[in-house]
Structures are given as structure tokens and as C-alpha cells.
Length: 567
Image 1 (cartoon, rainbow, N blue to C red):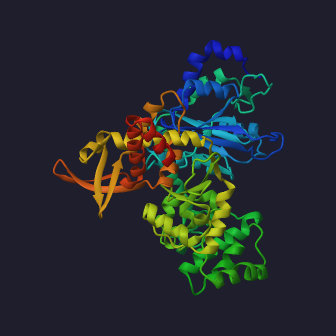
Image 2: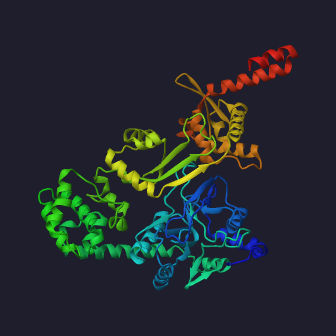
């Protein structure tokens, strides 16, 4: 036990506010989690949780519940203005010696705080004194720390995305430390704590460390200088291998400048072969044989090289094993895209698809769509694509959905997608939507009310919360801005929790709401207005019902009986 429950009450006003100030993330949403039963933290494997999206700002009450073990909190680091105040290296190696890792952090003078994760891995947090809009540099910095200095192999960087495209692009959350750090009635104790100088740190000391270790903008500038120097040194070392290979992708250059261990040898040689075959189609196999002897600590015997790698590569044009070791350690997508023989010049586009999220309906949210599950994929680290299970598993349907929803055309083969999908399922995120069907009916009633009360033929009025009445190809439609409707919805339900934005988009999809665009003139310039749209016939049933109710109230009892029978 690190702190007693009553101590939280005594200091919660200042303690929780300070804690929240360091984990200052997305202002519109966060995740809660509950651990699944029968998890044993003494077994070195990932602890499974049920995750729920909450579409409202994180507050002190939520954090207090986290401390007491009621509901865990995961914060989305990327803020609404696409900046960060903190970031994290999520170490997914659950056998790692945390105390030895913390010693490496201290010895290298890295501005990181190590916290044990719920599964026994590590969260390495960095905090910034000011909001950092150069998110890509921050991610690059942490990747440099993890890969080049700490020598980590299994890790992820949070934030996962560099910018947010729209409100539907929520982002991924990282669990906060000190879940149930006070003893609760059930006797649970904290297992997500900070380690500093070889000792477990109580919460108040952790907050002091956050303040002391926060860094300014100079640190990423220093990284850029050192990174340029390192790249030049790598290229200089590579000249001893063969100066002809200077245009290889960054991961292949790293392989050329380091010795290859036996455990990663076949993957490394395979990807080197992919590069050589593209640049030297006439003599690539003999070059690969030479590099096998030159680069490998224990070279592959010639017969195995011929049978297992060269013959395979001769069958067709393969792609770099970007998601396998050792390439995964050295991946630099931004630099690779600029290389003549990098990933943009390879026909495998599966690697631009990432971050698979499963949204499960637990109580009828998707009624009307005949689907209880939807899948969301991230394209090019930015765009979100929504899919049914059938669309996810059918390459032709998948490509069509990506084209229609985000306007990206990819060249993807069935076997490539099956392999990539298996990789995505390893880090699958699941979001459960547990609201009742009656709540959905309340939501739809408010939505119908909004459409009926606030309609206007003026396109400018839509920006003020009105509903635009317009016609497209002879079909009458209603257009509205999501943020304006959401404000109206939250105001109508008052103190109730209500639906979050992802659930609302799922309901909208089931009733035919779609994204629309319309040009209009603003300050003598043509501007494209993007909004949500639904056919006006959706409201015909609602209008008819209201007219019947009105007539029912005005008529005598005999007419009422007749009308009731007609319902």
C-alpha cells in the first residue's frame, strides 16, 4: 500500500489537480477500463481489459475513481489542437527487468519516468513544460531513446497519430499510473507505480518528479543535430561495405552497418534481397551471397540461402518485412518514402494500414444496421475507415471502402492483406458500447426534435446551429453540423451520461446520415462547407405521427378510439 484512502481525501484538491496537469491530453474524450476476470499479474503476459470510450473531458472525479480502483483511466495524449504535453514509450516486454531498465535511463541521463504497466511491462513518460506542436519530432525523440539508447525491441510510442483529422478520429489512449493505489474495500492494491532510483515511489513523490523532470523545446533540437550526425556516420561506415548501396531504405542501411544475429538473420537477408533485386536485377543473388558472409555473425550456409531465400525471391516481387525484426527496430517511414527503393516504390501498400479498432455493440446501439460489430482502420496514420466484418475480410470490398471514405487508392493482394491483418490483430483495440436501446430511442427523439425545430434554407445559418434545407438531384435533404447538434443533445439530456461521439456516428450510419460538401461564397471567395446530411423523407414518419397525436388531442372520444386502433 502506497497511500491510505483517507489521505486522498485530505489532499485530493491539490494532488489530483497537479496529477491532471501533467497528463493533459485530449479535451473531448478519454477511455475507461475494467480488468477482465481471472487475470494473474504474476503470469508474464498482457492483462486483458474491457475498454469504454467516454466522450467528455476528464475530470477530478474520474481520476479519484482511478486512484480508488473503481474505473481505470486511459488518456489520449494528442490534444484537440494537435499538440502534446506528455508522451510515452509503452514497453510490451513483460519479462523485462524494470529496475535494470531504470538504471539504463539514469546512466544515459534521459528525461523519462518509468512506471510499471498493468501487465508488468513499462510506461516511460516524458513531460513538457509547454505544449509541443512538433508531434512528429516528439515521437522521433522517443523512438531514438527506445531503439538507439535503451535497446528496446518490443515497444510502441504514444501518441500513435501525429494529427487529428476530425472528431471521429479519437486516437489511442495510454493507461495512467497509480490505478487503485489506495487500498479499497476488496483489498486490492496498486501494481502500476513509478520506480525511481531503484525504489517504488508514492504518488506525491511521483508528482514532484514529474515537475522536476519536465523538459523544454531544446531537447528535440539537440536530437535533430545528433540524428544528422549519426546518419552521416552510418553512411560513412556503409562505404566500407559497398558505396553502391547508399540509396537503400534506412532499415537496410542499418543492417549494412551492423552485424546480424542468428535469430534475425533470415528476415534481414530476405529484405536485403528485396532491395538488391530491385536495384541490381541481373546479379542480385550473387551480391546477397557476398553480404551473407560479410554481415552475419553466423552466415547462413549457401544451400539454405539458395533454397530458403533466393528461390523464394525469384518466384515474384516481394516486399520488405517492415513489421518483423530487425527491420521494425530501424523503421523510419518518413525517410523511407523519399528513398528510390523505399516503401512508396514497392507495390505492398498493406503497411499504410494500421491501428485496428473493434467497436462492439452490447445492447442494440446498431439496431437497424444488422451489425453488432464495426471495425475501424487507420490509413496513412491519419484517416479513419469504418468497416463491417465482411468488408474487413474481403480485399475488394476493403479497397472500395478506403476509396469511398478517404479517397485513397491502394494496390493490395489477398495474401498480403491476410498477413497484415494477422499483425493488426496482435494489437487489437476493443471499444464496447453498452448503452441500452431505450437510450437510443431517447437520442433519436432528440435528433428528430432538432431537425424539426431548427430548419432554415440559409447556408450561413448552418454554422449557427440551424438545419439546412436543400435539394440535391431532386431529393430533398437536411444538413447539419455535428458539433452544433452535439451541443444541443448534451444540453437536452442535462446530467445524464448520454452517448459518446463514436456511438452517435454508429447510429447515424444506421439511419442513413452521410457526409456532404457544398460550395458557397464567403468574403468574395469560394469555400467548401463540409457537414452531415440525411434525406428529408426520414422525418416523414415522425411528422405524420405528430400530426396524428395533435388530431388525437383535438378530437372526441369516438374518434380517439378509431385512431388508437389504426396505430
